[in-house]
Image (cartoon, rainbow, N blue to C red):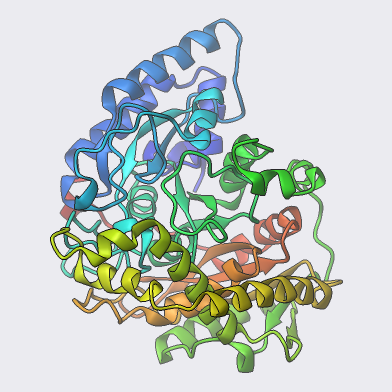
Length: 475
């Protein structure tokens, strides 16, 4: 559908930026449009705090700069939403938990500051799983964002960046920034039918964000297209003295993000099913085969990729959980061990489990991680991206024990353990009309190649993009 025929709230961020730059739209008009939609859709519960007054001030500043011929970046004047864990001075920073109710940030995260420096407009903070500890997106203590693809049944919105995924899918923001420690950007993207990109560790500074795991935490965009994800990452990428991971990353990795190259045949391989860390449901397997058929019809013939014996994706998923839990306990263990604290029982148990992990086991997992990263990079020589399922099934109804989406974590967590670049791409729908997804992985630092491959595969995997019917939500 031509951009001019697409409703403003479902246009790509690039198109909005172009329209603002060419004075077809003002940032003020665009921002008001999104704020109006957010106000009319409280039932979707995508936002934990809407910063309307600040957003309008930023939009008007962006318009004044434009009139002076000044553009701060390629997404100048475009609205964006940020996960609740990304601190912004003077706004709430609950981390999705009632234990932090009323806590107001006294500082601003590097990423939020970077968005403002680029001339972007922050609409507000999005809901998340409590302390980012869960991939279904469920949060019964503070409120769970609603997956907009089913107005009748409360299905998993994906987590932990649940509100970010819902906001983009429902046209409540053209872009959103989330966090991915064990799949928390890719899960909401996968279950909401949008793009979710987890950059390599060190691409985007995490300074000033509420932590979960120092080893594994990564910030990344949720967007309507790969190109938009790339633009937002370019805007935020670079070294930061307050985040050592950004200083350890070779500068060439960031520079390469700004160069796009035509894909060569054979650059993408497919992870052999025997190596999948989780089995797909019948519906999930059908969607996977349909995606393979579309690739074949378009002339893509990825070869099967068999990992070396040392690289068990199932074991890496478990190791990621071990490292995450051990480090999360160091931050939130005291809360979990205090029965008076109003934590969701499921999250309390997950955090408390980290306190029972022996230091020797944790250190052994870190050693395996370094070995796995080197082995993956070596085995991927000559291959730009590895294709594998992102989810074993589409979003299912929420369950109180939060175990129905366990397969999602097993498929997504290996990329985190590898410190890899990874991206979830929409790939069809199941019989209930719920979105499906696949993911691409590349070794750490090879983000440019990953994004180039993703842009080439994106229109093939999702040749007929859809948006959810939002009439039941008053939109």
